[in-house]
Image 1 (spheres, rainbow, N blue to C red):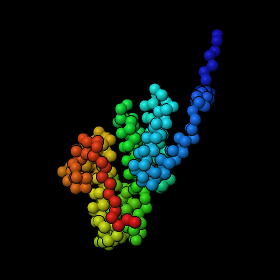
Image 2 (tube, one colour):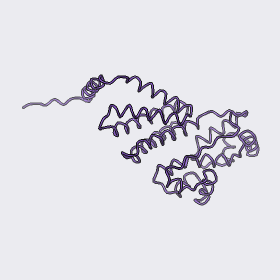
Image 3 (cartoon, rainbow, N blue to C red):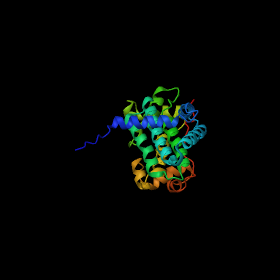
Image 4 (cartoon, rainbow, N blue to C red):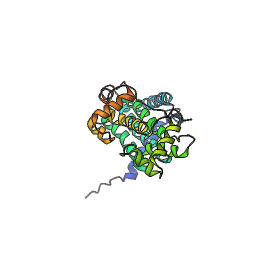
Length: 261
């Protein structure tokens, strides 16, 4: 009786690795890929959105050159790898682990469920938008009052919680009147407004990249009802949640704290 030896996983990986190494010997300038990727991460970290979109497209061109007829699969895989790299960067920036993990899962879901063969460039732009949106939340505000800086970061981390001014004040062991006064004085808007701004910003990703109903998203971000959600959403974006969902060409609303340095 002949016994057929089955290769181990390590042997299989080693064989693939050697074959890939041989295949890649014919390509020049592969080091440029990693240099370009480093540039991309730098641009995302520094919120240089348009430059980052151009750089990602340059990486896609390099992938396409090597992948041939498997280009779409290779690009899809790279998007997932890049999302994991960015999730690790977020964790290094002290994003709560659950949020970094949720970020990675959201990116993978976008690539797996929303990307078809004709939309890979659109998905690239959407990923950059999402990366920069989340990175921008981690930029330490530089107001002259440290409590206000901490409140901004706390709200950014806990935006999906049912937070009120009273809840935030209790967390920082100060009175609601004092918190409201110093926040308005240093940030230029009221704390209630900032809570609504952040909820609107975050809700955009669910409107565009999930199958959740608008009413469900409204509840997720703790608006009292869908009508109020629509009113607040339109106040800041100039369009309704449905209009934003139905048109991929409407840009994301991004709010900049007016007194931030």
